[in-house]
Length: 457
Image 1 (tube, rainbow, N blue to C red):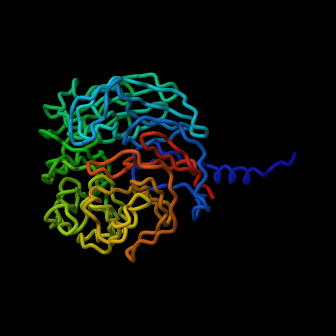
Image 2: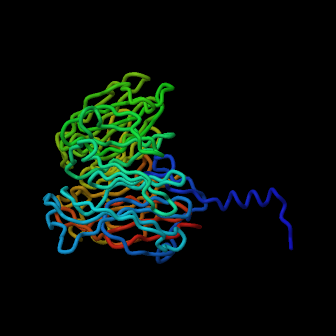
């Protein structure tokens, strides 16, 4: 037997190390995939599918941690049907499930199911990616059911019902703000009455540590995120009336900038620009850039958009996908599916393309035109950076490898991972769930299956 030198063994282990994707937008909640050994181009015929397992409906993306894949889905009760018009809000009986699979094989390890009758628009399933922290996984369903489960077995350790326990108002599109772990705290956008919009729970026991802020009516959908500005850790909460910064340890407000967002469409997570600025974008209102100090923030610029139509937008009017900030440029998907590059300092548009959100399901007459069609309203693609390029997963089920620079959009290749099984209000086939990137693989789901493809060199 040949004995390898210790240094060689250590280097081999480092090369073989795989990263997890334990929460929304990855390990650091920033949409960056930091693994190495990732392919430079797709092989002929596309990447290798390692496994596929059946799942129910849902918009929630998977999380991958410690050799397991976690995802939420929705199962209808007998005789129930999801409305053909997704904007309607009848009560639909059914349950939500937390599913756990082996990351290498797709074998189901456990399942936790609970009653969840929906009364929301777009009632096709849960929205939030599970949050995995050590031996526990935290899940938030569309009707406000928060669970802390044992990651190994799915055993419930504690739970909360935001509607019953906190008097929360039910958002039109359901609860969608991915919970955030910060030290011993689990921070959630609860929407509760009596200054309980934001609540920090003891992640081990579920005990309330602090509660803060209020916002009447539909409070929005934005995931909480923590950034450091001027040496101060700031919990950024963007609700339908304002952008607010809180002390994450106490919930005390640091500053507030009013921003009344139409239809409470605050889904994209705010992004930090440089050392002292914060960028937010919404479907109807467009974007806003703030300059942030330790205890105050001021508007640098605000969108001059006259509406959400392509000829009314100016900078970036995103409805779902979180944009990516690279230096002084912002890349994101606008209201009708245009992938845009804008200057962070001014909001000036640098370029736009429809290529990233279109694919095999785009009607030929639409594909012939460089400008967005009326039918492409809400078109979507999620952006994740890996090294010096980006992986974009669009609503047609295509995974795109591309370079995004101020010079333009350069598509390096694309592979079709799965078919869009849902439909928007205009009947366009869609997949509106964020994939996970871990173990040199991509994990993606639609309303029928969860798939794993190898992206290793």
